[in-house]
Length: 415
Image 1: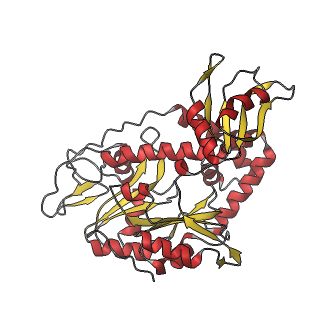
Image 2 (image 1 turned 180 degrees about the vertical axis):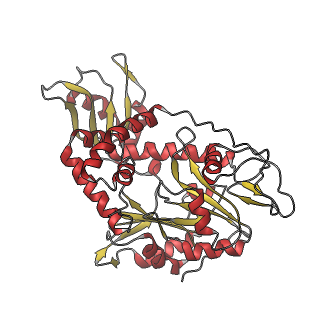
Image 3 (image 1 turned 90 degrees about the horizontal axis):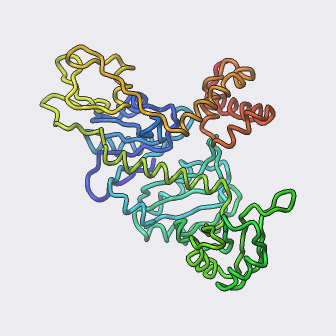
């Protein structure tokens, strides 16, 4: 058993990540209350749609119970996904700085977070360990480990880089944040349809030697208004982005940036969106009461519970707590049920619901007993893939079959 040492003082608050979208406060409470007395639990949600963001927080009364929960429950499979636990740090400066963070690639798909953690824990205290996965939970073949110290990270790199993990040679090196990574290929869009490769070469050639230029065209050979320029030197590519992005040519403002796959761009947008919600959630923080609990009271799902009577509440709640209260039959002190104020739905969420309404009957035809679970899994995919499945019976059938395999492997299949 790998034991995690508490750094920078005593801690009793845990961050719980990689949660399945169906995991709520009730499930977290039932899971972590086995480790000791809890002050509060919370699943963070999108402020508009109410959907889980895939992470939450658990507060223990006793820091020793929090430590034991990390050691015992880290990477435990909950609703089909291994959860990831680390100490909650309200100051994200360490995580953002990248100190002690390493990147591991060319991993065998059979290596999971637990195995990765066990492999690297001998080099020092690990703050976070994660393997990148697709929407189905399958490994993408790379991961990240963040150590508490830079020395531990460098030691792991020195000892393990180039070694064989499950008969595959892995690359291990310092993690470099996206904005600091070098690139040679530049993406340019929103230029005039009359512009051709020679024009782009002349404009971008002022920044350095170019190896290739392409203007994307339709089947009739007409420019689509975007293209790619590849530089011989990465520094020249960076200077071209700095110099040309936002510039106006032929009364059209250009966008010039690092060339990326569409899937990568969508993932970065998703991460920025989730990070925005994380910042907002961090300062809303309904885990803690606006007034302190009295003697003998404790917090439960963010609510104060007097031990001698029924349930009473000492402060206001957000939508998630109201919903939980309704589900568990809790009432206010005056005996009246709490008012429910559903959040306003964003356009994206409305679109997803419309797709879900169209998708469910199609899934039901293929898998009647598990239609609801499978549809929920499919709705985790991006909007473009969902639309493709609605128009492609073959693609839908393949994804439904894959979802059924995931449910069967996790013993969640209704037979």
